[in-house]
Image (cartoon, rainbow, N blue to C red; front, side, top):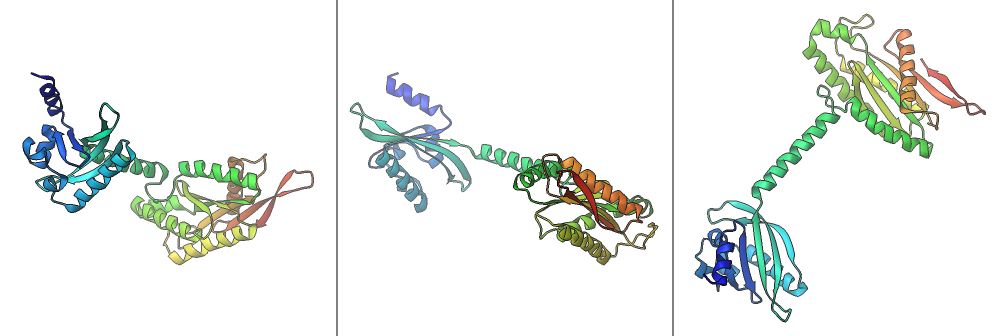
Length: 320
């Protein structure tokens, strides 16, 4: 067996498509995989042009433009391309074309190697879909479809630091559903889940015009973070929450204060400084929530952080 036959046997054993074209774009060599792909015998491929092997003129034009680019730039070219098999099925190839030089260093031909990556591409797409689904699941609450506490903590930390640097005002609201445990006991957990979903959607709508993070904080409690919000804005938004929920008219005969589902809201707003933390803002909102519950529920209490000349922060009750 001579060397040329040995080389031919080697490339014929490769599953990838291997082909060689001269500067006139004529095929001067290929392997068996390429012959099988175009549905031709070896002697039918050698001496042929793309238009003799591929029926789609757009494919032929694409090959010609790509081959011309290789010869003009005298550099390897790589791309992914969809091709149609003789049976009509589609295959995605990762193709690399290399310039072939003679002993004088002149490019006299191109060598192409095409690898079928159809299944690999499909697997990668499935993995990406699963990753996106996993990311969504890790950041969203299953019942309410809004962001969860984990997402809130991570995202609010970033916006909080931005507000500290830019010295802009930040607001945090804790929204609690009044007598929700009793609601679940009376109407069942499926109705409870539907109630949570509808309230979550309402909160998202209420705060949609502001830069916000709305999340389920746990159980019957939601949390909202707002950037560049004034005390007046916060009071108005809290009142808007009460009004929007009242319009829903979600019955709750288990409530001790109303025939319908109601909310109690605690809020805190301030321009954060170096002594503040995300936790301290949430804690202040929680204290306001406690105060609102103490006053009888179905209402909101807003606290604001103000500074004395010494720099010490005080908490001021804005509304009740």
